[in-house]
Length: 267
Ligand code: ADP
Ligand code: MG
Image: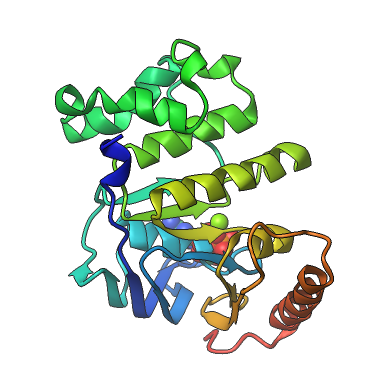
């Protein structure tokens, strides 16, 4: 079990980051997607990011993943500036994006192949299949898997690289309500086993409250963090406790406000 103890979580810092894209209706002008956004996540923390559609959540995750560049501002993992994609930052999307022609085992190995370390790390694949409870499905193909199982493969594929920060972009958004709740527990179990830092984008307020240490609420575009709410409810959390429901009410109110606030800095 040496492999599972190997990861050290990292802190993540985003400082006054702005990002614009060419406007779809006029390619000669640019539209601001993120405006001076700043946030800070401690090593080992699980933080949710919620906000209206189009406020720039995925854009922010892509910048942290190193898949795109900011116009201005700094992004740091620990004290290292982010300049390109790196194995220490794992990314999982709503669509598990598995290779349909590869078995579960080969899909999980794909992360190692990409880094050229398959030979030395192959022995870890079994461990990670066990970690996501798919050890009996190593030879199955993605079309044999349920949505929840496929997403567990995607999580294992990201985790096998021992990411110091795990970036999850609505990873459970395509699952039915029951599978989704089971997978929330699964992600929490993985987080508690691995102690990796997690930035979790979700549309779902209950999911954010159930899972995270802190909840950051983004404004409508151009996105910045409007409010950060510490969530100190004891774990495991009870979705129907009065404290849970009170926090839910507060966040709904804030989101409603964020959704209706006049768009500041939108020029
Ligand atoms: P969210 O994930 O919060 O729904 P996104 O980050 O996907 O929002 O998008 C934020 C804004 O940036 C949207 O207006 C979107 O159209 C725009 N955008 C995102 N990526 C691109 C791109 N590659 N080219 C042009 N516009 C983009
Ligand atoms: Mg998105």
